Image (cartoon, rainbow, N blue to C red; front, side, top):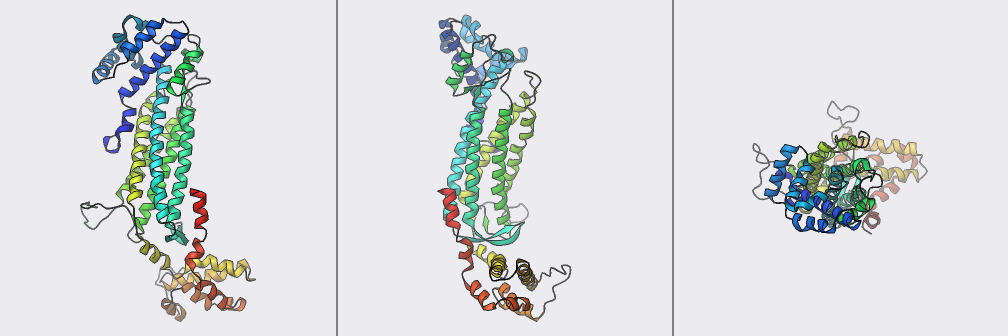
Length: 462
């Protein structure tokens, strides 16, 4: 992954030095187990640790690369370089093992290490989301469905929803970390013909893994597909939050926005611009993470007991997906922590359309007062359409300026235009005392819509 979207801790997991160190530990632990079984001399196992357990410096890595240029085989190049340090006892290294035993077990360790960092990232993000949820718990804002005003909600509920989503992602990542934490030291085609299963059990225990029940010559790739699919889901959750913020930052909405640092520039051409560049960036990064999901799924189907069609894919998607998601989670945490919210704008948006957000409340009130649902819906919709028309939006003639009658012109003087039109509705007056409806709508509309917020927060946060 390019440095712009990379953080050192995650990058280091995929660096040659870490990979080669894991390869060495797999081989050295296997030698210990083979020595305990009497297959190789104990002094040979000791020599591997004493002489081979050196830091994988740039010089050692360069030597391995040099050997690989000739052998065209990375594991053989590694073993050849290791033998240069260990000496005669090196002939006992890799007894009964095959390259995939080293490669696949190492990949399991690296994916576990990456999952641990991602879990820490999610934990940090959850802290930020919870803090903002509590801060804005009862901050009223208009809810939207299909991008259109619906009914009031609170900004805190938005944050609580995202918190719950990332709680689920945390559980998913824990589950897939366990799924990928397997070890295969079974030899060619996975039959243990040349190595005792006790070696696999020993190596697995030392590396914090579990033995793969049936590994063929490779660890089954359904595990890896599960892992990358989970990363894809988490990335989609990142985009879910980012998309909400991007919409709320639009000029005509402006209910929330990314923090704009002193001296920051939004556009090379338009000095007034404050663009949601961080959340747009997160949307793009999510695409990169999800891009790995289909290749990972396609890696599941391998020829017979093994082929290496998966190998080139994993060499790229392993680092790129985890490095990108690590960066994205950290960036999202920062966005949430610094997010600027505008409660006054939220209230303005909520109140700007004459009380139509209470349409369902009125509908239910009518049905509870002996009006059929069909009649109630027609009455309330009729009033709501007149509210839209009074704002110059004629649902029946969208291509021409709205022609207002006297009542519609008068409505502009009233805050609750929905009630105003309903109070003039002859059909409603025949079915119900309008005074009862006025009493209903004189009650605090916001508290009506937010009365269950505490119950929802209890479900989310306990």
